[in-house]
Image (cartoon, rainbow over all chains, first blue to last red; front, side, top):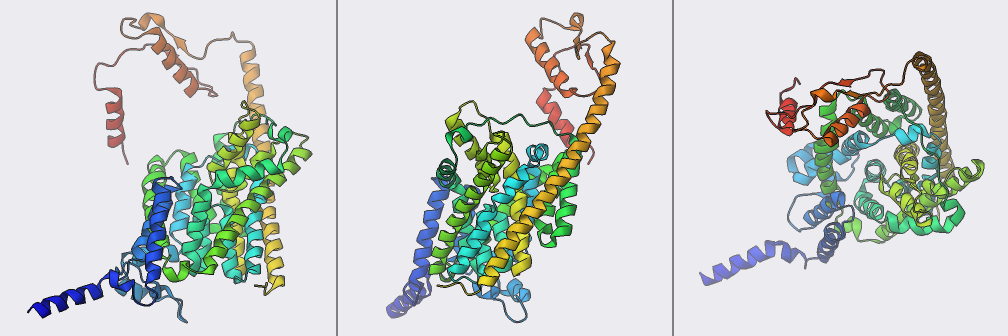
Amino acid sequence: MFNEFINTLIDILKGSGFAAFFIGDGWKYAVMIAISCGLLYLAIVKKFEPLLLLPIAFGMLLANLPGAGVYHPELWVLTGDGIDFGRVLHDGGVLDILYMGVKLGIYPPLIFLGIGAMTDFGPLISNPKSFLLGAAAQLGIFFAFFGALLLGFTPQEAGSIGIIGGADGPTAIFTTSKLAPHLLGPIAVAAYSYMALIPFIQKPIMRLLTTKKERAVRMTELRTVSKTEKIIFPIGVTIIVALLLPDAAALVGMLMLGNLMKESGVVERICKTAQNELMNIITIFLGLTVGATTNAESFLNFKTLGIVLMGLIAFCFGTAGGVLFGKIMYITSKGKVNPLIGSAGVSAVPMAARVSQMVGQEEDPGNFLLMHAMGPNVSGVIGSAVAAGVLIQMLG
Amino acid sequence: MLLMDYNLGFTVTFTGIFIVFMMLVFLVAVLSIFGLVSKMGNKKVKKVSVTETATEEKKPIVEAVNKDIDSEQVSPEIIAVISAAVATMYMGSSKKPVIKAVKRSETRPAWATAGVYKNTRAF
């Protein structure tokens, strides 16, 4: 009887997750758990984009607990007949079911709906030239794409890595889920980590590429935008962008729907839902499931290092592209445009605009660039969605 | 590691940059035209309202009727704040509201009233 007791205990231990650490490559799970704890520290203590990094880190933790069975990467391997969703529904865990929202491209457009409902496009409408700064800041995407190709990534992987430079989490997830879903985890972690580091990445580049005189430029007050303009803007942009680039329709369309709900003023209840409850629910599901895709096989390899490096290059080139175009506008406008607002063309709203404000105030404490920088900032959201559409169309 | 397909790399890079720029340049043009049309429309409205009010005596937008105000319950500062808030609401409108009375509410507190209104209005 004592032997049976010991044997039962041994069997339980052998079947536990602890034993799995010592079988084959099981040690990688322990490494991933340690990384997830590190990311949780960054999210909670250092407050690095906690709204997304916390669920991503916890999803990573859940997916790398051996034997937990909340996520099954083998269910999402593409076969000749595509994904067997029937098998997912039958054999999948909770995160497999929730992951369908990522795989089917549902969550990112819904996040964009919430973003649109919280965005004021007034500064952009009053100064349409801000669109050009938003376009210039997307240069980082394509430079990083080229760099990733040089490193040996496939074109689809390179496109997914390049989109990190758009500084837009939902866009990066949407593009990667279509082009290179096996890289979703590392790309999402890289994208959100770099977005949290924007003040540290952008400031040295902005100071390097501008002179004191340029940084001190005070811009003229923006004109008042009428309610009619704010209502027609989302409708017009949706029609124009969706007709010219259908692959961007999902993201841009939902962004503009959210904005129209906000500006029309006649659907306050659903607008509030989009801004709050819907956004929060989708954020939880998206973060959790994206984190779950970061299993040891997909994360602990040299490709992840390449993604981290190229992601940083994408951010740096995007910032540089926006600032340099800002300098061109400074010259052509005879000193009326402050080049610092160009760096806000990366679509990390509103952090990038705040960075422009902070750097401008270092030269002139009375210089308020925030609203001027919001124009390029929100145009960057549209620009990154357009760039994503281009990449999906050309590489998908 | 070497680039496997320079052709694809250059094609996607330059085409992508070109398309993004052209798309946003097009949006700039459309918005600029729309902005001009909007400005022209506003100028016409301003001309009409300027000629209409040119002969009128300048009056304050909001007129407070002091005799209706119970000064024991509502201080002049509160009346001034309420007047400023009402004036801001009607700024740019052709309507000129007149505050006839400011009285302290004796029934349900304002926040509670707002909550009841929000929860009972039609869907």
